[in-house]
Image 1 (cartoon, rainbow, N blue to C red):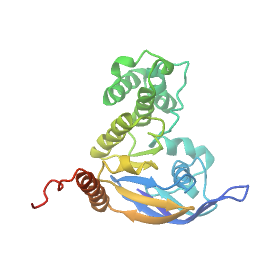
Image 2 (image 1 turned 30 degrees about the horizontal axis):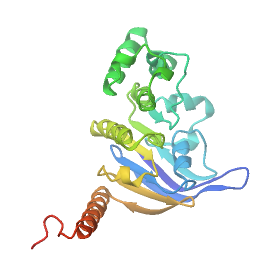
Image 3 (image 1 turned 180 degrees about the vertical axis):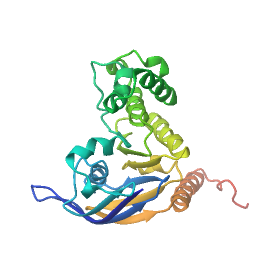
Image 4 (image 1 turned 180 degrees about the horizontal axis):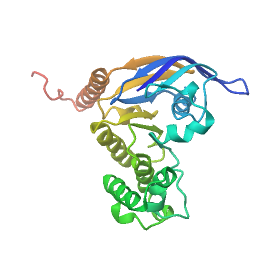
Length: 252
């Protein structure tokens, strides 16, 4: 689904955001891009969505080399993927339904089809009863779910998200991540940039670790889950020791 081959991204001010990144993401995978701020996570998502282009190297999305896509072909290319932003990017003077419908209006679908798909997308994120409200009448978590509904309303094969839980409390953040997992469960390829390692631990998903614009590590799904379980056990052992009793499951 996605392939980066020795990709570099250098900006006009001389900052090198990516330095020789090579990675592969298969169709149907759920993958987290992790790393500190400035590690290159957002740059990778921008190259996938053709918001930016690489300075050197090749980027392939859904078997297509993005270097072959000319400016007039970018809207059609983007119509095949869904993008979720940390700050939602909702139009505040339009209703929830109108915000979600925007990709379908651009695609030229009939009003009947738009209404049907918008209702289905809002139902998927649990906000069907909020369709006539304006974004500012919603909570931050609800606004993020509206952003997700807009991203999936056109039924994309690929869904990418840049720090989608960055402004949410831990409970809401987990709800949003589980929502992405539901879409992945029905075959959508999901790529999420996040620095919240503790949140990622709740899901058995592959991680690609970035640092200084390079891939510095990777953990397949089962390895990521094992690491989370080991951390949980270590925490339990520490708490039990402090209380003067052996952790659960320890022979007496």
